[in-house]
Image 1 (cartoon, rainbow, N blue to C red):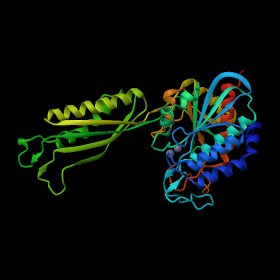
Image 2: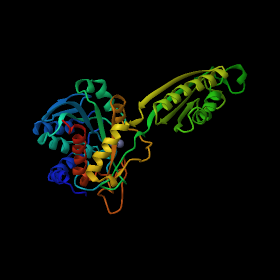
Image 3: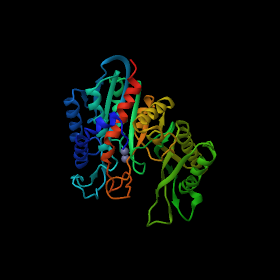
Image 4: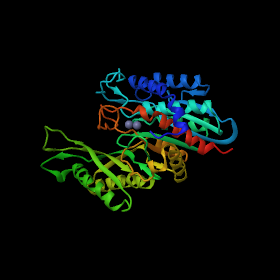
Length: 399
Ligand SMILES: [Zn+2]
Ligand SMILES: [Zn+2]
């Protein structure tokens, strides 16, 4: 654990933070049902004299901390509160009391680190401007960040920049990692429904056969990656579902075949290419066989793109916290998706990874997020809180 006066001060609250974190861990709540968790967050913030707004995206909480010096700038720090549908297999005392639900992504820790920072900032508002601490629901799959934005998050709480943080198992305690530009993938779903007349399997010439363009489509999607995506960029298209016809009637050409898949990309332009070409290629293949293609592309999570300027700022904040030698500014992009990307679509900002080390479940092991033995590492609570405080000082320290 690095030592600095700030970390030492925050470490003074370590027991309280650990208690909060384990309490939240023990009572996991999934998307948009974070009622108890948001109650805890709101009570803590209010108790520390912080103005609290509730109700965005049902369970969202926003705390507003004004600096004691005047300033026009405002920034937002964001944590997620939701748990996963997963059966916890840990045996420790603070394991989940709710069957089938578990804080397996460390959002209990994210919430607690931001609470720790909020407490410190409220007690020592030695900055100029405003800090909004955002506690959002439903990061896992349902886009709570998007819902908060749609319900007016940044209209009610205008900010110049927004920042997020996620723990990373396998990255040692005391280390941070980030990269400017795309860092997490966009994750979308697509569906092509090929329709023809179908008919008797013995007489294909009497009708039109949607199995033919559907089969061609499975191969053609790789041509989109190979021929339409610029070679210096990357993308993944995978078919995950094909259905049509009836098992009991292999001699019947079906009238409808559905092909569904996932699409991953790292830039808005590549995402646009994938969306456009899947539809064009599907329609052309269908037309060539006298069929039609109904196309639906569902944009789920956008790519997470760190702004260059804010990435430099958070790297300085991390360096102030753990030393520049412990901050990796060129971590590889990840293939997972993260709904903080919705906030970064609206505001410049950056999303950093904090080392979770090997967890506390045994020597040498390193349970990854979304696995049943994962646990957030309480040792990094003061570290994460100190990082947030350092970031506020860098962003709003100057009068
Ligand atoms: Zn997760
Ligand atoms: Zn997560």
